[in-house]
Length: 217
Image 1 (cartoon, rainbow, N blue to C red):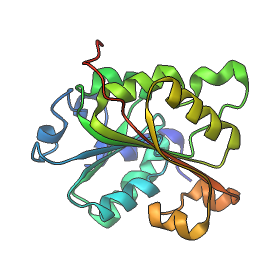
Image 2: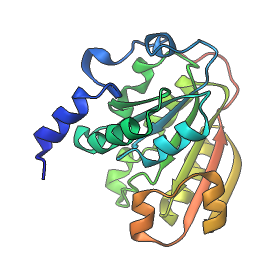
Image 3: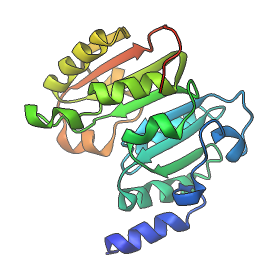
Image 4: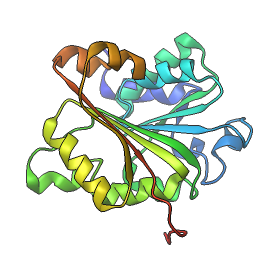
């Protein structure tokens, strides 16, 4: 079994890895990665081992897909998947969601996916939830007009917390599905390893970025 250090090194050696000086500057993601400026960009935050990112990259070959996670050792499995599938439109970024506002230009991203984010159920840990206001304003910053935020969770508390926070931030909740059955789940995307292990119901939200004047970063 590889150590964490070996996994990080294996990740960093992959052509699908974005870390250090290989991370594009804001407003240059498409150009830096060899894609036309007209290509839509999808960001999966907390992509883990990359199962969903690989799936969506295959399903949308005309899109640029970026999977992001804070742990490089998880991303080792993700880049191995990308290498196996030989996907030219997929990269895995070793980064943190707290830096999104500086990593992307305003409106540079068309879709964001949060697949089974940690619910941090204790109130004192609420600021760590990926749907906390300190993240929502950054999603609003990087999403283009009409851009979408997708959330899938098996945690009921996080599902309702997300709706409350999105409504408070004037987002338009386009879909709110409190019980997503297997067949409907497959229509949205492949089940993650976490879902397969835990089982249970899946809750889904799709929200549209609010239309308002330019934000000040």
